[in-house]
Length: 449
Image (cartoon, rainbow, N blue to C red; front, top):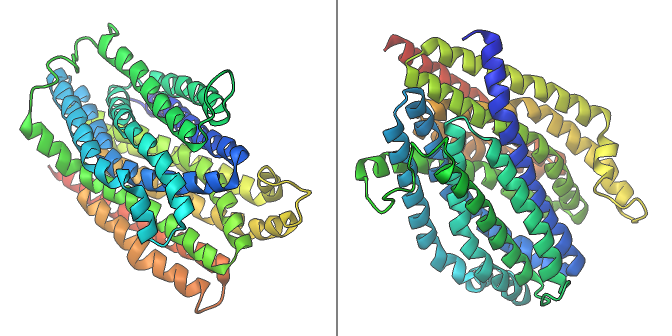
C-alpha cells in the first residue's frame, strides 16, 4: 500500500475514534455541570465517587482494549473464527471483572471514611456509587464491542452510539437530578441513574449493530456466548492486565499531581484542573490516533507485512507530531482565551487563576509532543501484542522518576505548581523515550524473524 493509502486508512479509522472519545468526554462534562448546578456538596461527593469509579474502570478496560490488537491481527489474516473467540472471551473477562469490583464499590462510604473524607461527603458519594456501579457492566461491554468494531475497521458506529448515549444522558440528567418533566427529584442518584442508562443505551446500540447487521453476521459473536474458550481467555488476560496497569500508572501520576497542587493552594489546584481539562482535549486526539495505530499495525501483522507495519507506524507518528505542533501553537498563542472559557471574569479570583494558568499552559505545550508520542507508541506496541515491557517502562517513568521529580521541584526546590508540572513533563518525556526504544527492539526482532 502506498504512503497515501496508509494516511487515508489511518484518518478513516482515527477520526471516528477521536470523535467518540471527545463525545465521551462531553458526557462527563455534562454530569459535572448539572450536578454543580444542583449543589456544591453534591458535586464534591459525585466527583469523589466518579473518580474512584474511573480508577476501577481504567483497570478493567485494559482487558477490553486487549481485544483490539488481537481482533485486528485476526482480521488482517481473515480469520473470522479467531475474531469471534477473542471477542467472546473479552465479554467474559469484562463481566467477571465487574463482579469482582462490585463488593468494593458497594461499601464506598466506609472506604472513603477510612481515607479521611468527611462523613457527609462519603454518605452522599455512596448514594451515587450504589447506583452508578451497576453501570460498570454495560460500560465494560461497550469497551469490548468498541474494540471489536475498531479492530475490524468499522469504528463509525462507535461514534454514533456515543453521541446517542450522550443525548440520552443530557435529557435524563436534566429530568432526574432536578425533578423536571414529572420525574422525581433524585439529586446525585439521578445523575447515577442517567449514567447507568447512558452506558446501557450505548451498549444496546453497539450490540444490535455488531450482532445483527448483515456486515457482521458472519462473525456471530453472540452465538453460543456461554461456551468457554480457556486458551483465548488466558491469552487475552495476559495481554490485558498490563494495559490496565499502564493506564492506571498514567492516571495515577496526574491524580498525584492534583493532590500536590492542593497542598500548595486553592488557586493552584483550581488552575491545575482547568489546564488539565484543556490538555485532556488534545490527549483525546493522541489516544484516537493510538487506537488507529494499534489496528493498522495489527492488520499488517496478521497479513505478515513488515513493510506495512513500518509505514503504518510512521504515518501515525507523523500525524501525532503534526497535531502536537498545532496544539503547541494554540496553547502558546491564545492561553488566556482558552482559560477564559472556564472562568467567570467577574469573579474576584479569576485574574489570579488566569495569570497562573498561562504558565501552566506553557508547560502543557512542552509535553504535547512527548505525551502524544508515548500514547501513539503504546498503541503501536499493543498492535504487536507487546504489553508487559511497556507497562514496566510506564511505571518506571511516571512513578520512579516523574513523581519524585515533581515533588522535588515543587517543594524542596521551591518552584511550586510549576515545579510539579515540570515533573510531569520529565515523566512523560522519559516514557516516550523508553517506549520508542522498546518499539525499535520489537521491530528489529520482527524483521529478523
